[in-house]
Length: 438
Image 1: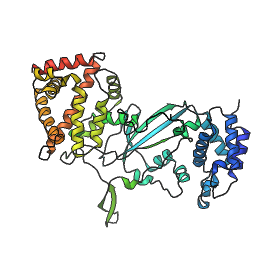
Image 2: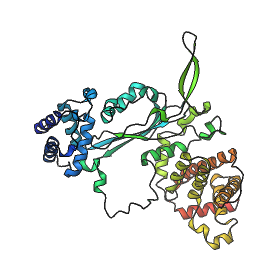
Image 3: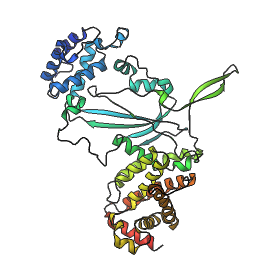
Image 4: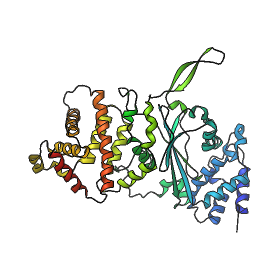
């Protein structure tokens, strides 16, 4: 049984490694590259068609530091031809890929380490970040790039990990655009497509069910405990195209004044933070494996609509009026029905569709005051959408709509777990009856 790369593969890579900078204008047409591609197609049945395999090999060779692709000053970054052959052989035989999403929690105060599902909130030391992201591989990708692990280690991170079975050829993993159907309508809108990875979206949704508005020290500034300005995704598949992490300058910094060991004042750079109360130490009671499991189970219930998470995350990622509108929409998505807009229902129940959602909200949260607040907040939403003159939305109302939206989702999870197979229309009708009787 073979335990290392095929001898023909090693010989082909050695031949390619003899090319010196600069790289051929069209590497794909270079005889040494063509020879390597043909060897790979002969040895590995999952290599894919030649045009796609070109991209896969280019990505892999770039990760290994193909000498002709480096500047002379960075020649030392190249792996040996033998090491590159081992890496390429391993990649062709790989059955699973680990994909990691790193999300900096910008402006986060001190947070406890949290674990939920395949996600965690943690800090990294400088050496841990270097080990995780391999700065040498990044520099092979772009010789002028420098990964600033020292500055990044000052931040807290949301880390989301996926383990994915590889069911596509090396070429398709590198160049999926070559396999897209020409019959697809590229201008169409996929209504349930998220603006980020589904795994990151799900993790953020779980985090947002915690009472950050209770932990925030100055809700007049913001109820959030952090921001997520970007996500950097990387995986251990050398065939896939990979990008470089954004600069640490993309995060929020401020200058502070401190005292050195010699008693002299010094100015230093420090991450900006949104101050949190000490009660944030209880975050693990909200964000843990059990909560993640319950959320995942509840989302399978008919009464839990998929767009609920879409709008709760959208509210977190938005600011101003868009944040307010998204939180209102969370409640409507959770408790509204198409039948609420029929003429018969408008005549039968106070306030039409809005009144019915308000009644269900009162019943779900066990207090008629919630329905009254929703009615008033929804009217503010209507003032904006219909172009009526309106004053600024006050900070207490901004926080209130966040609280109601979050509590609605939390209560819906409990209801879904209590009776997971209950039809949505039956559930909402029962809530309506209970709410109108309050």
